[in-house]
Length: 125
Image (cartoon, rainbow, N blue to C red; front, side, top):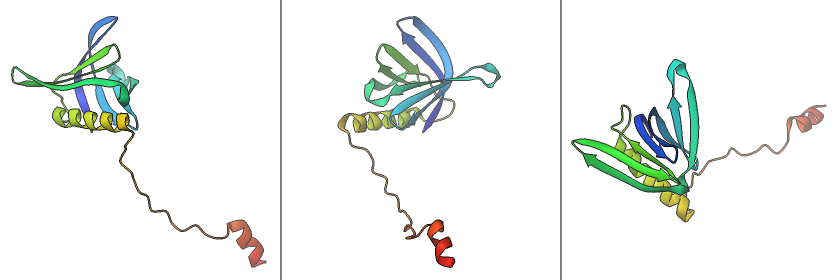
């Protein structure tokens, strides 16, 4: 799930508002900061290090807050995506990363051919 909107980022160097997109990719939370003229800056944060994932209703709006080390994020109501669903996805991914249990994806591989094209060339001669 991808969530796009304004985010308040608080860290040791201060606080600033940034516009960007959050999504999960493998074992990381990815934050693509969108600047003007189509420029982006991508930051990744390990899911296992996320802390204090909360959904906060305030004044009729929803906020999702979470921290990764000294950096605290506060997502405002999203333009694109569901904040409650995103917070639940973060919690589930974090729990899976902490316990080492991940969703197993089963792939069905085609039966490998017994001979390669090199062998077929020599058999044809």
